[in-house]
Length: 245
Image (cartoon, rainbow, N blue to C red):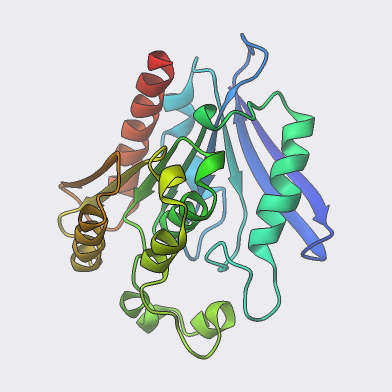
């Protein structure tokens, strides 16, 4: 595998940004399957390379993993004016799709992320279900009360009034037909401090009859031991989905 660290100036953010890519040594097809992989709060994209066996799991797979640095943004256009969602959707993704042999087909584009990145992956999936086939949310933040104690700058993202039921409202506002084309997988550890909130969110999805949705609780905590195992499962599922096409 090739590991690329691309440093580039973002016009939207007005600053230098980094994106990391894990690329097969040989591209066997014209366009390659893409895993858009999001990091959590307090990390950057290097975490997936330093703290998991991601490169080993992707070895000899026709998948390009793209891991953008997104700060503490929750993958949002932040209240303080940093337009991270616009940066990712309207700048970084289109430019990488021109630069690399990335498939543009929704059925070959996948989202995954841990914690804050899990929230980001769910948000992008629910807002733009026509762009992605499947979302894998690993121990996702689904309610903000759980993270208030260690994110004093939360208001810089959402403003002085935190939104309630943010992800739920995205689902209710989305085109239900498009959502039904999307697969959604939630994975969380049985000792995760956000397990209660995830159970409530999973119940909401089940009540909405969200198609192709599953919720799995495995042994583990909110840590990299759990996410290392989880990302292996994600890649295995992607390979299985690709083989079904």
